[in-house]
Length: 115
Image (cartoon, rainbow, N blue to C red; front, side):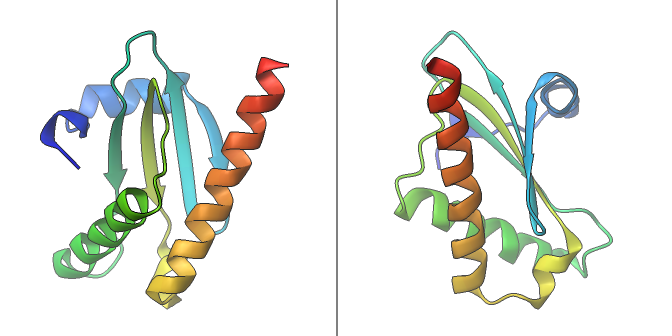
């Protein structure tokens, strides 16, 4: 993930969470705000009540890995991925499968909106 593709500012996070469309499962909440330009930006947030910084950063790296290796494309969108505490009980493969299943739900919803 390139630096230009990462959302870092708190105001941007708040804007996307307030105005974006929400998708969720037991482990993730994903907020998507559609844009007109062709840049896709992603922000990943792991609450501080999840263990220590080392664990939070590991979870972020795992999610970035899933996004890059599985060609997950949220084209022309700003996306915030909020991780829930229940993720601590999962192994990487389970995190990957849960994230991909939620992504597939988002893709289906976008297809329905176009029709």
